[in-house]
Length: 447
Image (cartoon, rainbow, N blue to C red; front, side, top):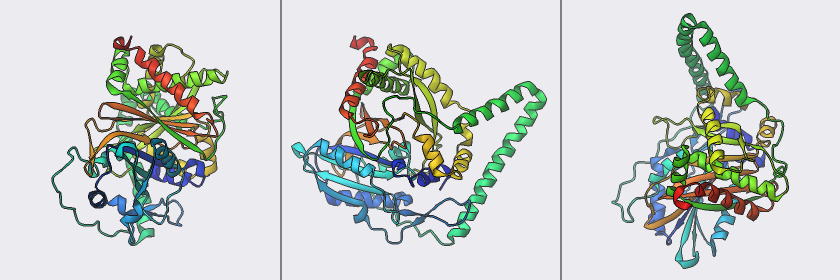
């Protein structure tokens, strides 16, 4: 595991910190079960991580290792059940989100829910965050989904070869490799830095101070919850989805000169504003954790390549267009933070701290928001058409996780609410819808 993967793994000693991603693909009908089994079998051969479990080493300074599960049983990981309503699907997804994995097996479970109204179905896909981040999960999609209801047959590759021998030696070698990598990174940076120091000593010193300050802000302890309302933390979860046409959101954000992610955050903070006003507890700013992708083309599909950045976002600003621009300026600073290249080093340092200390910091963040670009075209699962797709990210100690996943022209904003922080979940979701409508109303075509 990378240090950033191990970070999410270690934090789960506290059940409230479980790092489980649950995506739900709604289908126009039940897929052919035999074809589905065959397709998932093929995916586990294309992506070896899907056949690997986590092995923890009782050796100081080593991170857990991925090893082949010699007892891999597809029937354990691919299940089917029945449901009566879409709400029942979301209730099942909420249970899955807070149910721990069997740590003796690979960290994923897929459940097909059949017998929904009008003959529809839904596919629940549960993954551990150490196995894949949001973008990684989207990149895994082509191993399961097709762009044609009757795709050409593709032979399965051979099963992945066994791994796991010499775990302790491999773990120590991995740790040594990480240390050497960090040292190499420092050496590579030292050359240009030394040259820069000779050419521009004042500018080089300022750059070093800025980098140190960025790293310090990334790891700085959080001592307070900004929200006067969403303060409780527990193990109950409630999931819901708010959908918005992607084109409408793009029109609004383009008119404001900001990104879709900025518009999404403005909609969320607008919803937060209305929610706090309903509780007679207006708030100026809230603290958000936003995942920033550091994924490169060389990273494997099944990997977690994000860093979590915390910053304050404006909530009290009533003008949605101005709120979008304010958020854009703050998010831009975060996306270009000098600490980003040091993500794994920072995670390695946090891994050495007591999990209760780190978890306590994360529980003082108000909400987590993430924007993931999904498939721009219609997908099919074993012949069944995917009509909608939503991704429910883990709260990781926050009061709420709000994840926007675009699919085939629609943005689905999935809400994962801690019911100890937000007991009136329907009120919260209604406020979020109001926040979305405010942002869309800034688009000239909707006025």
